[in-house]
Length: 404
Image (cartoon, rainbow, N blue to C red; front, side, top):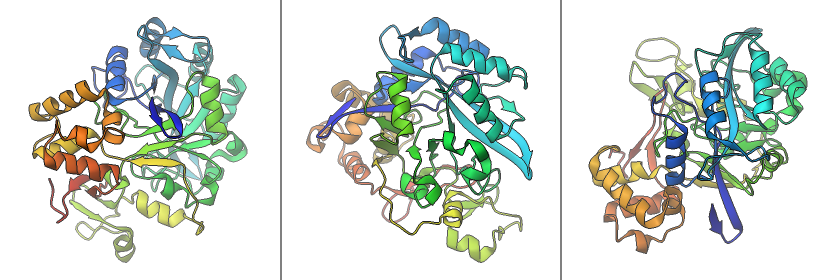
């Protein structure tokens, strides 16, 4: 929790994964998640992967139910039950959509899993796949428990985003049909910002949420994007803020940092902007095949609102490890970076406090001039990033456009 002139702000990352999801760290445990969430400065985590029986059993054994839909560790760190499903089905053409789920307690989770067992297997991955439409899935969640919240995940991602160029629809209404009014919020994904999402009229009455979709507990992944709530004392309050669009705001990274912001071909080492893609007619000039069309293009394609629609509070920042590494001219996981990082955490408690609150004068005693300059630029949203594309993250660049 961080105190500002407007009151208390609680930072939550509700989209993460366990070690039982593919391509995730095998060292993800409740203990590691709690440790690094505290280091990051988060106040609340989603459990992730409640559909996986082994992980669910660990959650039931390790976390205490407060009776308010909030689970706590022995040391009092807060979690809520979350999971993600992959829906792969045919609606006009093949659809592949990821949905984030929030659940009010273990009873609701057990009912969800019991129903999913009639539709397929859950044991092979923390994010299981089912042949169910978005509309039917949300309808069933509502019959199981009205307090289950379904949130379209990373909605612009080409693969598995509901509005993505390869897997999705052209509108939420098209995807969710009769259940559209039970969709109260959307997840921006790393490659887009609230401002970009609000270019669609359809999204202007939805709550714009941001989470990390982290596959590890390291502080350059967990909480790199997060949502700022007014209160996290109960699941009901968290749900109210989402349903009523009453959150404080979000933590965002520069959208160019995301691995699908620009269009391009990873294998061809080619990327391009919206304007260039239009000139190329979406064809890669190196191999002649169709480009992987990214988020920036897709937003420009579907955006139908010329009105400037003001978003909630937004902190656009890159993780501290990235800034220290760039300032020292070394890799993020190097001993030098960890030494500076750990000294800062020891002195100033957590990463978000360092990135957002601690004065530059105080920080100057612990970092060199270049790192201090980058922290200052980070706060002002002036870090330059070479855009990511086709599964490659964007990278920080200097004023001359050169990599750090």
